[in-house]
Image (tube, rainbow, N blue to C red; front, side, top):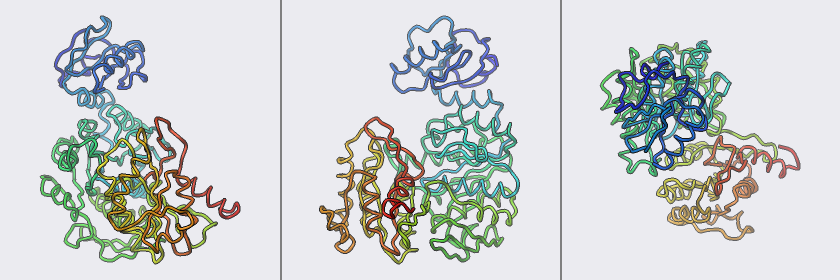
Length: 514
């Protein structure tokens, strides 16, 4: 495609150079730039931008897009495109370059603080139960069926997003369930997409290292429903919103088009008439737009009942038969690392679960769900990530201190921070609940009796402590990392998968049986 054709009518402030150059691809990472590419320079730092541009040109870029800052002297062989918002331009250009696949693939955007990943997996299972191949775009990666084609951002940069949708369309996929993060919305990664439907799951504290305030965080989410969805080039768009969430009620009031509410309240469009939940799963009778549906699911807890409700409401809006909804829910094992039961033979009668809960609302929801399902103790291994919102650390500690019988505080992904400094900030929340730190290992067994908590910065050792303490009837929740198979420590990426570690330790405890 000629550069002039690619950029015609788009938000460009100035072009210096030849508009007739042939563009063979798009890139935003200079290391991925190939001869003939249009390169988008999106770094926030001017020096980094100039370094990246030089790298892209050395690799054969024919044109570069920059922000409204002085780039100095550009090479004569390259066309320079100046745009006030390069990422927005990148989205519009990517849509045009890849043929706007979201105008033909039914794109379902799912946003909210928690539940996005699991809901996307349930939606995909339901749609596949109708015989319709479905793609997934989100935290765990981009999948076409079981084939993974991308790992990276929860909401990919627009070039990766459009490219994935184009590949899905080429392979016969007609539906895609995509997690849409607040950062992805704020940076303009999804502005050029045409969504068929968008869902709001809930809102709690998260990403306040990026957004200045909760209201800014919510405002980013709200844009998906008030600006992006209304501008979709798809007919019959619809918003699916959890109506018993306080922020969800604000979304419902703001949506001008078609909308469906869901939640536990019987006044909503989709709600449970009755349900039963235990560690074997969920059984419920749902009312969805006046239609009754009997569902059984292997997923655990009321938090997953809400995810099922949202997926069922969305499916009804898309015209999916209720029998297919029930079949898809029954067949869906959930998303990796989301209240995932890790089977071990070494600790009979103990339930071990791994969950991605790394933010306050998610940890509280998971622990609350387990308290409703368990007669025994809850042993919770948790921590907080480094280089992220520090304000949530004591909040996470307070939640664990209030809802877990034995909190075991450890490292998550400390990144560049001192793990013990992070732990000290989390401890403030634990001590605020009246708990005291158990300093001697010989006293660990009495932690729940005395209202204590345990600190062990080494995550593997912490998991071992939790498993050794667990008795028949107890549940061990290992929270924070979920599906991740690494730990980020002092600039290094270390292999670490909570599920693998559980099985290894259980094997050691059981003399090799796990």
